[in-house]
Length: 248
Image 1 (cartoon, rainbow, N blue to C red):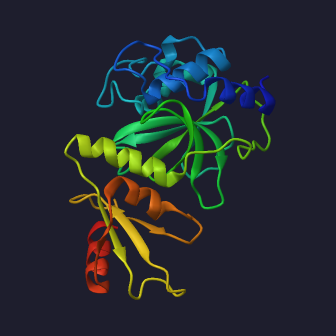
Image 2: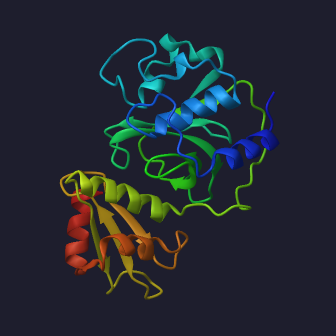
């Protein structure tokens, strides 16, 4: 059985690498999952593929690992944990195709569930393999390795990519595909302590609204987002509420 120490060693070994298992489409999120399954857990390569178990509406996307779990035979090595149940370090978390923040689906290795609900994961794309805080919205569930026993897994010894930086990287990728995100700021009547409130949303997409506090629990989200978008557009309270109702 693999332990937390083994998992920590694996994380340090692959972090900052570009992993391209199948030599197709470059280093994708799927490649990190496949490498983790085969090189760390000893799973044969074929069941990790997105088209293992046959084709279907999600064929070729990372989320198909979840949808074809039974037919691919992954049940020999993993237990399927639906969204809403507690996740633990070493679980493989999967986001659905078409979800707001991961419209092309996503898959990553969980390291820690943070107090604010964010999922600190070992993940790839955008960027090389990194530790990043991912937004849980759109999660289908997780695959729990049967050959891994871990307790608390601490990631504070190495710097993690902030969730804001992850969001900004996703926004850059979407902007390259003519799918822009909008960043706005409310400076008057925003927060009780007088600090401004920020929000990012995807025009035309209900449920894409995410709020950020410069000095709140999520810390420097706004600064990191502004570094990618430039200065946010200032809006009135009325406009803020209108957009929030439309896109939340």
